Amino acid sequence: MTIELSPREPGTGLIRRLTLWLYRLSAIVLFALGIACWIRLIGVERGPLARFDLMPVWWKLVMPPLAVVYPVAGMGLWMAAGWGAVLWVLIAIIEAVMHLGFPQLFGPDLVWLGFHAGGLIALAGLRIAAWRQTRPVRHP
Image 1: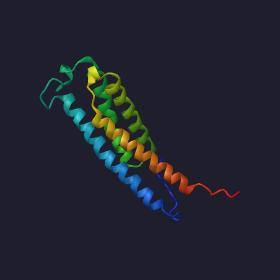
Image 2: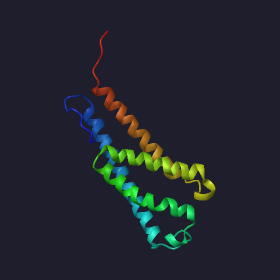
Image 3: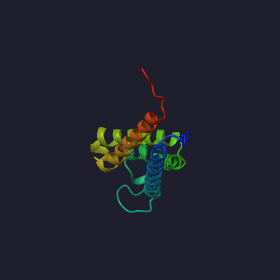
Image 4: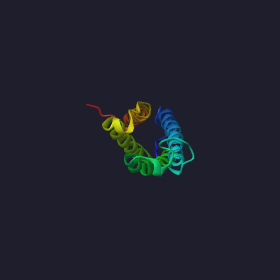
C-alpha cells in the first residue's frame, strides 16, 4: 500500500513529504542494520559474536531472521509500501522482547529500541495527521 493523498487537500503535501522522508531515512538505517547482521553472521569482524558458529544459541536463534527481515523492511520502507512499516513494527517487537525481556542474554540495547519507538511514534503521528486532513467534515 503506497501513500496516496489528494494534492487538492491543503497541507497533505507536507505530511506526505515528511512521511516519505521518515520512510527513506528509516529504510537506510534498517538496511545498514541488515548488512551489519550479515557481517556478524559470516565472520568478517572479530569478537565473541563475530561468527555464527561462535555465537551462543540464543543469538543463533535471532540473528538469521533479523538479517533477513532488516533489509526486506528497509526495501519496503524505501518503496513506501505498507508492508515495510508492518515489518518495522515486527522488528521493534522482536528487539523489545530480546532487550527488555531477556537483558541478561541480549543486553539492554536501549539506543536501537529508542530509534524504533521514536520512528514508529512519528510515523503514527503523521498517519493520524494525514487521516484527519482527508476525512470528511461533519456539520451538526
